[in-house]
Every structure is written in C-alpha cells, then in structure tokens.
Length: 603
Image 1 (cartoon, rainbow, N blue to C red):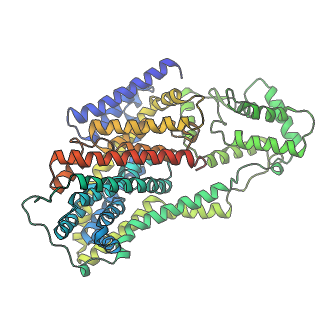
Image 2: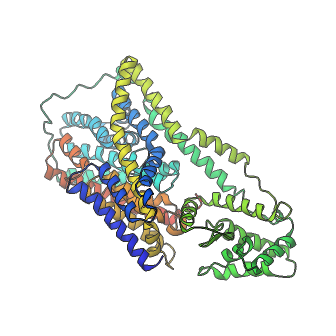
Image 3: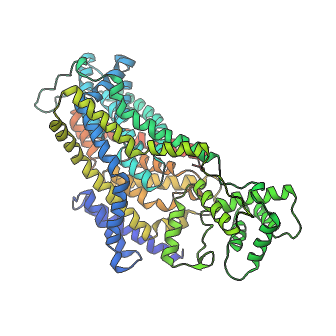
C-alpha cells in the first residue's frame, strides 16, 4: 500500500471509531444503532460503486447474523431454562458440597466460571449473590470475598469462552475454530481466575465490607434439594456442547496433521516432463503457472532466500536430478508453493488472466482466512490440473482420519450442539416445574427477546468490521506492523495492539461485548499466522483480555456488581474495577506466553 492509501484507511478507521463512541457516549444511542451507523459511514468512505454503498452493509449484517444468530439464541434459551429449572442452583450446591464451606470462595468462583459459558454475566451474578449472602449469615465474615469470587468466575469466561456472545463473534470474525477458542479461552481464563481469587482474598483482608440490605423485598427462600434436577442433568447443557465442539476440533486437527495434500518424491511421476514444462513456462513472456512457481520460490525480500535459491536452481537444472535433489525440490514445493495462500494469483493476474482490482481484493481476502491445510489442498489440486495425472499423481484427501473429522464436523457444529443442549434444558424445565407446553413457550420467548438484542449488536459489529475491511484498514495496519522484526517481536506487537485497542474501547464506552466486536473488526486484516507469528486464537484472547480493563460507571457490569451486592459506587471502584484490571492483565500475559511457547501456526 502507498503512504496515501495507509493514511486514508486510518482516517476511515478514525471516523468509524469516532462515530461509534460519539453515538454511545454523547447521544446515549443503543450499541446496535451506533455500530450500524458507523458501518454505513465507513462504507460511504470506502471504494465501491455508489449503488452498493448501503446494500453491502445489509449483506454483511446478514452474513454475521447467519454465523452467530442461532448459537446466541440457543444460548439464551439454555441460560433461562437452567435458571428456572434449578439446574444452575444444583451446579452451585454441588460445587459447595465438593469443596466444603471453608473453601466456599473457590466453589463460588468455579460455579461462576462454568455457568457464565452459556449464561450471561448479569444472570450468573443474580443467581449466585443470594448464596453469598446466605454464607455471610452463617459465618459473619468474608462477604466481599464471596461476591468478588462470583464476579471473578463470571467475568473471565464471559470474555474468553464461547458461546458467550463476545468471544463467539471475535472467533467468527477472526476465523478462529470455535472448539479451539473454547479450549484456549478456558486455558487462559483459569490462571486469570486464580489470580482474581487471590486478589479478592487480599481485598477482603484490607477492606472487609458488611452485608447490607438490598431492596425492600425479602430474600427468597432456597429450594429444597429434592426439587432440583440431578447433577448430571444440570451439567449436561453446559458440558455437552463443549465436548461435541472440542471433539470436532481434536479430530479435525488429527486429520490436518496427516498433510494428505503434500507432495512426495513418488507423486511426481515424470520428473523430466515436470522440469521441462517448468523451464519452458518460466522462459515464456506471458504469465503462467510455471513462472508463478518460480516467483513464489524466489520470493522477493524473503528472510530465507538462501534456502529458496537452491530449489529454484534445481528446477532450472538441465541434468537429471539425484534422489536427494528430488527430495529437496519436493520439500521446497511443499513449504513454499503448496502453503502459499497467494500462489494462485499475483497482483496482476490469475495465471495470465487479467483480474480487476476488486476481484483481486476478494480473492486475497478469502485466501487469507484459509487454514494452511486448506491452502495445501487447493494448491495441490491446481498443480494436478495444470500438469496432468501423467506428471503429478492425484492425492487422496478422504483418508479415514478425514472421514472421521467430517462426521465430527457435522455432529460438532456449534448450532447443532447447542440445539441439543437447548432441548435438554427445556425438557429439564418441563420435568422439574411441571409446566404446560404453553408456559414453556412463554419462557423460551422471554429468553429469545433478551438474546435478540445481543444478535443485533453482534451482527451490527460484524457489518462494521466488514466495512473496515472494504476500506482496507486491516491491510494498512498489516503494512505498518509488518517488517523484519526479530522472532516473536511481531507476535508481541500485534497482540499488545489488540489488547490495547479493546481496553481503550472498553474504557470509552463501557461494554465488553462492543469492545471485543469493534476491536476484532479492526484487526481482521492481521489475523493470520504469517502476520501474527501465531494462531489468531491468541489475538482473540488478547482482545477479550483488553475488554475487561477499565470497568467504571459506564459499564453495566459495574452497576450489576454494585447494586446486587449492596455496596456503594466508591466501594465498587475500589474493588470491582481493580479486580477486572487484574483479570485482564493476567489473561493477556498468559495469552502472550502461550503464543510464544505454543504458537499453533498449523491450526
């Protein structure tokens, strides 16, 4: 990108952010209205025909809603049914029984940690606060520790583990596998939760708070144990989708590790014909696949050019190749050609076919979201088609491992997994409360009304992110941050950028979900292993960590914590705000550490 293009893209970004924050902060507009307005403003500024300026916003809104709408709606149903049936209460009591009253803070934190995966934070806090108040009546101490433990567990998974809306839309926008997001999100969340619990204990010692009356209504009496569902049934709606989605991720990873599309020496059946065709094509004037192979291997400015040059030289060599030289060429083709997402097209043509600028952008955008194994498969099929079966043998993609992964993808689809969980939670509610089908329908409708707003906000954020892509904001950020940096420096810089942007957005407008959606939308262009130096899941968790920072009076979570706990605003600023600071910083540091130690670039 030219310097002028970078400046204009960043101007579009600044105008979009100012529109979102200005509407939310100064005009008190709903987040959906702010995001969809910003999307239209940025779309007007971005390239494209006048007729499509607004229609493409609606198209991208529909794509985003189609990607996450079903999952969020089902999660809302699961949460409401678990609350009404007593399933959530059963999970909490089981945790209390497991660790004992002396370790009640651990049980409260663990309960919030688990329940906030399918249930919204305010609902989890509302559910668990009565238990904290009941414990204080028994012990006459540790009230602040109890409520901060609940907040720790609920807040950390709310921002890191799908299908909670924030991390779900971040994973969707950054093209992160949902199962991988669940596993890495939980892995990042656990040490942060432990740190949050330790900080809560410290604050309880230096600032013990009394329990105060909340409202004028008497506190409800807890249900008897025999009126609650069994533990296995209570946990099923939470654990079933996690297990199904994670199994999909594991089996797909095993199949991807086979690298079925990669070449072997024997796969090139006629080495002389292959090299002769490559040499002739490279000498031709017009663009062709052979010339493209050589240019990809001899990538201009590559840091490993000393390793690439001998491979191109062997392809150009007139004499026959030894077996060792053939192995070197195959390794080069596998590492540089098959794994190159840009292999089928350069900036000017698709193997000699001239493309328009808009088509080039679309092709490059779609390829940048490919997994390495999918790029390998696409490029291998191109080579097979270009040189014919008598030169390059057809590869077998549908191995037993891949077939198992395909079935796991069917059964581990997030929408299907949560549909099963929703059915279980509804049946549990019918069973425990003896509701009529009409009463169940009313309960489900109430849940969908709350979930509908979240769907609108997340889809609006998706449309905003797509328009930022149209304005080439991601390309501009990538150009600025890309360079010959030391190993790991690019990872640290980009993850820190994601963390900082999300934190700034959270402080400015108060919503963690909006901060995550907007932050990930801005950084879609850098969400690839080539730019990050690690899997984009770590960028997702860094953004989630940043969205915890700076909770104060403009954050609904701040008021939920203060008002439901019966503490003052000043007390909340001294306890809740620094607690989320601890959670956010620890989550980010864990994300950064994992990205450097376990980059997962092949996922």
